Image 1 (tube, helix red, strand yellow):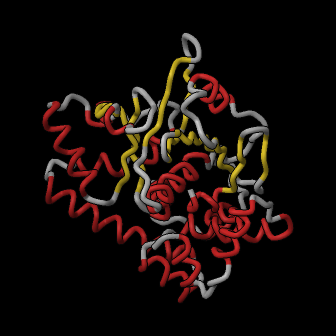
Image 2 (cartoon, one colour):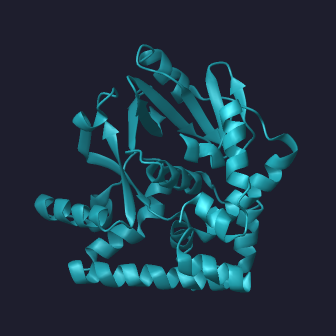
Length: 293
């Protein structure tokens, strides 16, 4: 279920229409922001799988919610084993969080599988994409309207279709993820870099709104790249998105992109964990308003 459906299940039918009003009027939430971001983190941790949501409603116990999610992931693993008894397809899925948390700007299957036939790898990736358990974001070699025409099939990021499952995969080294870890994540107190969790959540929300996922990178210098995390198109314009889970004082990649492709850019967004505001031509958008893009 998407975020609005999740809030309905929690007995809250007012929040999302209220958020839409504030989004359309471009107003900050001010005093109510803290409550809204905490509610959204709850959705990030539980996810939208009905088994996980109903377990939370019935027990209010994150460890039991985590156990329910592990059961769902095990069903996925069993299905992947049927498609590929070698276990490689299952491994590609299980490694999504570790690949996304690294500094590279693409999923690197060969670093996981070693030598594998190119045709076989393409088959596995197609099976992974078709399974509906994942979301693929492709690199656009020439960001413009009609990005599907310029996407690079060999350069992509992979996200989990459900961020709640992504959180459980990120802590898969434990037999279960304790309530304490969930509480710290919920209250934004865990020292773990949460940037990749928010990036997965934004990918999920953009896809749920009917957007195809694309990103773009280009060299900043000999050793570093600029990166636009997501690229949307509306009409004849590009809408670049940069994601920040903490600091937001600078958005160098977004600024550089808008200068490089000034004639192609419409609205520009920095999606982050603070309240709605404007920074020059850049809209700083709370993560829970991603659903309206």
